[in-house]
Image 1 (cartoon, rainbow, N blue to C red):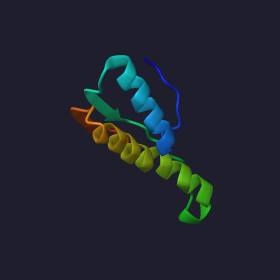
Image 2 (tube, rainbow, N blue to C red):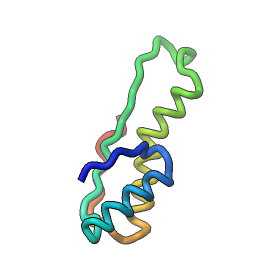
Image 3 (cartoon, rainbow, N blue to C red):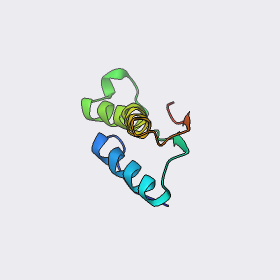
Length: 84
């Protein structure tokens, strides 16, 4: 099953978890592997929008997917891979 979603937002994570759980009955393994990274010459080159985008992809998505999956007791194994 392939689903396209921006997982940096809680409501999208809920939709993905619900769709997968409805299709398969449960989630046995959750692999958080989303990561986004940009090169910058200095911290001054990173604007607020870019910083938020990176945190939404790398941190928020992991938090939201884990919380939604765990809260519904559908997950048996959790792997956090993509947070670089």
